[in-house]
Length: 388
Image (cartoon, rainbow, N blue to C red; front, side, top):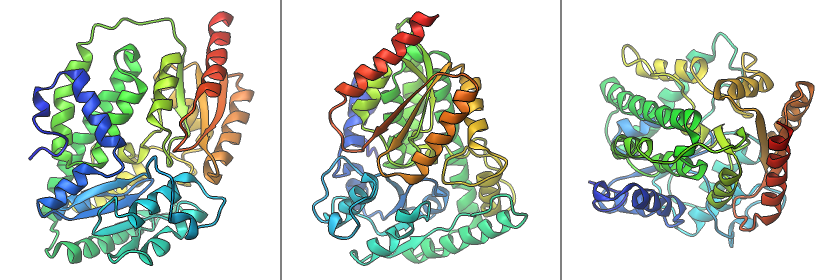
């Protein structure tokens, strides 16, 4: 059963990318609705990371809740005024019945998100949960704690699914998601090594789509589309190679990403990092929940909402730039995002000390005008090009 669109296998690359973008942009979540029309149940999970394998193993559809480009009509009365857009637009999706869910899971990644599940739960009829990821990732007890937290989540998912989620179920799901992460890494490798073949906005759409469809179908799509991207006849241009930092939670508008990609080669980023959080295959032998917990702690990326002394953010950004061959950085943050704005300052200080050029900006999920930012970015890029 294809949920992306009918007979997408027969479309050319351009039409496939267009169809994928339409799905990602659609605030009425057609793939989620179609899944439910066939009798399936859905579990929505808020940013940043969630072990989707547990939901998948129960035969349910994990849905990445990342807000939408809509104006809140009801959510404003449930939250304070000074709050990031993703919080309000995500809740608005539930209040407007745009996003049909059977369960919602949030994480205490910031002061606002700490209350999201409680506010959400007071306004819907289905259960809302909080997944408590380790606050001290360096503790000797972190992995065991997280394994038990995952097991608690498994029991909640079993209640919703009306069936047991066995270790074998989890191992099969781990294999599916391992394949998915390998394919996404291959896509990012193309963007890193041959960025003229695929745009920043195109990569974003292809990754974000994974949070809206069954992973098996996402895998099939990526298997088909990767060779088409690599076969493009585009040629390299004289552009600055940069990394984009600041898209770990609230997501920039896709059109903004397209504008940025027209000015420079974005060879790495932290967009939708939760879907790419685990950086190596999760072990399929032994206890699958313990393997997932270990992967979260030991084989994972970084973000402002995970506190791990082994991953100082400035050094992690430096490594991201080194590994991708970037010579400059775009430091962004969502408006009203305290974790993002705090890290932006730390990154800027570190880049100043290392004499690395960077561009600073803010964004909002539902912004539609980028003219001023585009002019500033073009000026920044031209200054770098003429300096060399």
